[in-house]
Image 1: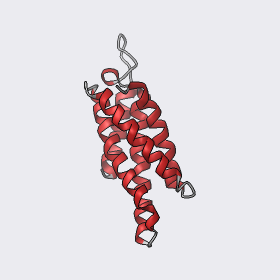
Image 2: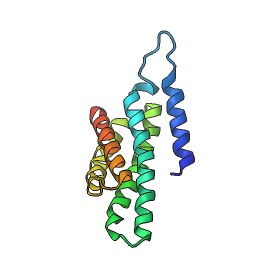
Image 3: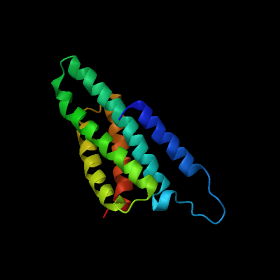
Length: 139
C-alpha cells in the first residue's frame, strides 16, 4: 500500500464519518464504528512510517529491524483490508477483526522492542489502539 492509497483511505474515512443525516445512525458504514475506522487508518499510516524506517536501518546494515519490517508490512496489509471491509460493513468484518487483532498485537510487541526509534514506538501505539478496537467487534 502506498501513501496515495493511505491518503485516499483517510479521505474516505473523513467523508464517511463527517456527516450524519437526520434519522440515520451515527455509526458509519453499516455498523463499523468511527473508532475502528480511524484506528485502522492510523495503523496503516504508522505502519508505513515504521516500514520505511526499518528498511532504511536494514540498508544501513542493522539486521535487527528485519522482524519489525515484516510485522509492519503484514499489519499494513491486514489493516488496509480491515479499513475497506469495515467501511462497507461487510459480513466478514468480525472475522477479519479477529485476524487484525492478532496481527496488531504481534506488531505492537515487535515494535516495542525498537521503541527507541520513534516510528516504531508510534507504530506500536497505533497497533495497540487498533487491536483494542478490533477486540470489540471480533468474532
